[in-house]
Image 1 (cartoon, one colour):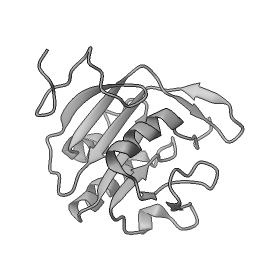
Image 2 (cartoon, helix red, strand yellow):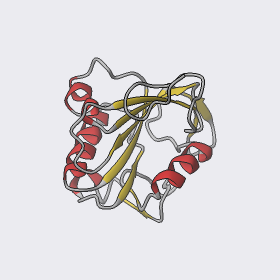
Image 3 (cartoon, one colour):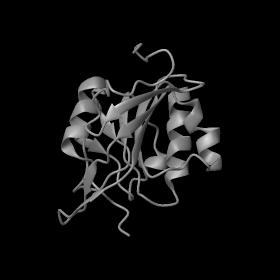
Image 4 (cartoon, rainbow, N blue to C red):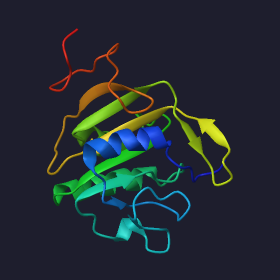
Length: 163
């Protein structure tokens, strides 16, 4: 399985309008979403993250390290949005760090990610939002696969709208 995929433009666009990303902390030149980005050579896990950061980590076993780093950087004042494919709710790192995010946005439908050659694949996806100094518990919300609010399935917590 390929581990590098580009975020769907409509999904990134929706989130970028909300957060105004300054740095893509985990990218390759072909899939970078921001003009400032860290590659494997510059090692985003070793860099300080500042401002509003986008993170689409490799779809491999390192995802927990990226989520941990996102939470730690939020404790230093960064806003970090991490997009994750799959279902990791049984992982130790999910319980240690993802549940301490500001928000967990579950997507209704599967966004289509593209590889460098343009081939697409649809994947279950969740978005973690780490706002500065977040401690959890995370507010959960439902979004459509383009990142816009899902008015048919409201989440729970402070940001949920009553039915």
